[in-house]
Image (cartoon, rainbow, N blue to C red; front, top):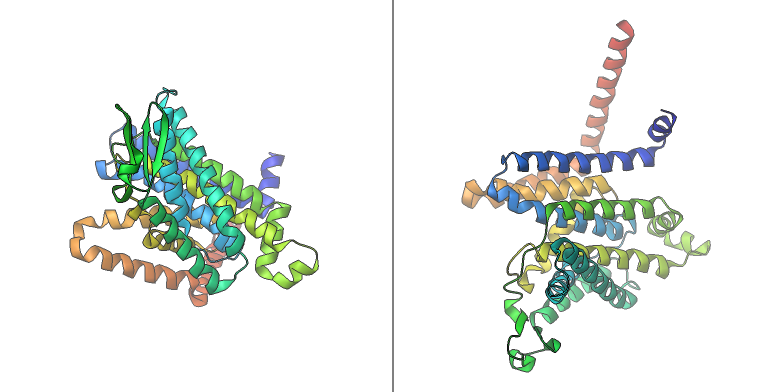
Length: 357
């Protein structure tokens, strides 16, 4: 009881508790609906992508919302993770029979490769600020996508074969093409699962929330709020920015591997500029630095276009209108003031009724 009281009195702990609770309750409800076959086939097919996009939104929030750096290349790291995960899962197939274990190996491999790419890109990129940083991360995201589009990867008895043309792979008899350049990955064994996606969300939340509330998190927020003041007290700007950027890329790579192994075929063109913008929209609408907001906005905004599919030609117009309305409501000081006034009135009324009772 005392521990619960302390939890409720500590704002950050209370927020973290609510975030985990919302995710766990949502997962339990979806599993219940799934077990009773209430969900449509379309909704069932969206469960794993939703998990991936929640992780992508939360990880990007670390860079954009918490560290204050505008990155437009997150889809590039997602793509690196997706195709690295597919290659790793294919290679492990003959050794690891358990599909869940194979999926975990693929996600770790995808995360590590995306993290390495994040580190290499971060060295020159994070020296820039503002619009320049956004433009350069966008360019690097497109470069990563185009590199993947020109890769040919095969597997035979002698191991992996990598080339920039199909003729250069030269597979032995019984070999299999994994990546086929612009055609991407085909014939992928689908091993992604919703429970693993849920665990990945919990892992991401645990890592991000612990960092945000740690000494390092406070240093990252200090850099965001006042770079000059942070430097004056001895905070190494580049080190902390790099840590946030690489961790964000690592988690995006894990999400990408989960996403890629949910489909039998996938092309690199999926991980383009538009996907990066969509992820950024989830972060902005959920609230910069608001982790729970990212979880909710990624879920709602991913489902919304599919939910309005019956409206055919008008669904994207309505989707755009919803985005504009939500943005205006979220960032309008008058709207926020009205909400606070209503909330205060309700709280006062409840308190008054309780005293009268």
